[in-house]
Length: 264
Image (cartoon, rainbow, N blue to C red; front, side):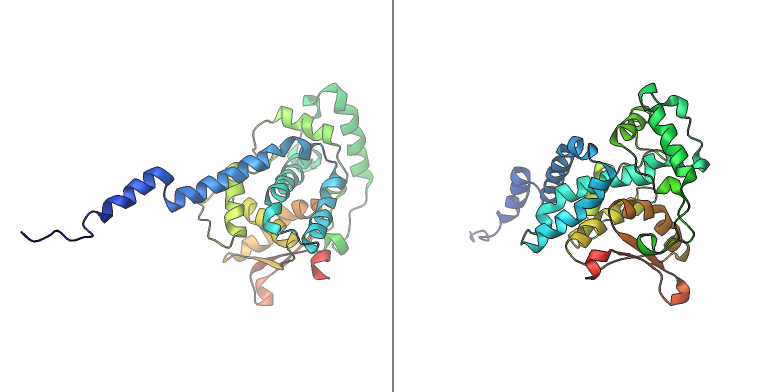
């Protein structure tokens, strides 16, 4: 009787190893989930930062990169800052947006005075022209986008609206954090309509800018160029960055994310 081929039993090894150490995809997911846990662990101290401190973090991160720190190792810290900026600037700040009709009576009495003072300050503040740090804005930036909001007011709004849902919350979900990590690592993150690509892209942009890269976000939809730039502008401004848009009449259709420090 002829001997059986020496390789006959080898196909069994693959499924066994997959059960022991997981598939390659499982290992990728596990690594990303560990990073999500590290980001979540920074949530409380990050939420205590003032708007000015949040904006200043980009300078601190870049200095660390210049001194030799690998940008990849800054991912948990950077994404914690980016997620907080998204929630504040694109979500919670809308309590001052006249078009969103926020009911100030929902706030606890301890912060109603703060809200009233900031509302008056925002109303009295002249709109900023779309130059300098407001470069790329399609129209002057109103005062409610510029006033600094104290952490206690952010927390009060979170208590009223615990779920991340527009218009008053825009906290990226864990899966959106993972999408941002995947893109930053130079891989493709496939997402369905409505899963938050407009949030995922800016997360990756922040860390890429910290690393000193010039960043472009390209879309095949001409309309989305300006719409998404305007929608995410408060996020980039809150992080100390500028964001512009290149329109089809410029023979390109993309969003351009950059910052003053990255240009030096």
